[in-house]
Image (cartoon, rainbow, N blue to C red):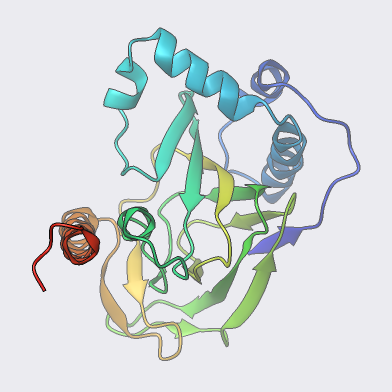
Length: 244
C-alpha cells in the first residue's frame, strides 16, 4: 500500500487522462502505477466529471446504469480494455433517518479483504474516511496468512492510495460524512487465484473475496431489507393515522 498526499499539479480532463492512460494496464510496474495515481489525482481536481457522467447516463436512456455490475453506491464512469474508472459513494452510519439507513446498508464496512487486481483510489468529494491496512508477508498457509501489524490510515480529500493486487489487505471504516472516492481498477487477466476475506488481527482466512459476491449480495440485500422494515416501522409510528 502506498499513499500520496494532495497534488500541486493542475487539473486534467477525462479526455487528457484517457489520452495518457487509456491503453496502459495498471498493476504492471510500481512506476506505472504511481504515474496513474498522480494522474488520477489531477483528474479528481476536475469537479464536473460526475456531472458529465450523469448527463451521459441520462442521454443514453439510462442504458449505462442498467449495465452497472455494482450496487447502488457504485457507478462505472469509464471502461477501457485495461481498467475501469469507478465512483463509490460512502455513507456514514451516524444518520438516524430511514432513507439514509437504506443507502448506508449497501456499504460493507470493517471487512478485511484484498483485491485480485491493483486498485488506485482518490478521495474526490467529502472529508474522507479511515481504512485499516495490512500487508501479506506469507500466504503459504491457506487457512491463516502472516500479515504485517495492521495500521489505520487517514484518507483525506485529494489524497490517493495504491493497493497492490493480492498482497495489500484493508478494511474500510464508515466516514463521518458522505464521501465519494474515484477508483481506477485493473481489468486485465490476473493470476488465477482468489482474493480473500481475512481477519486483519489474526490473519485467519474467512472466505474467498472473489467468490464473495453472492454471499455479500445476499448480506447486503438482507441489511437493506432490515433497513426498509425499520423505515416502515418508524413511518407507521410517526403517521398521524397510526394506532397507539
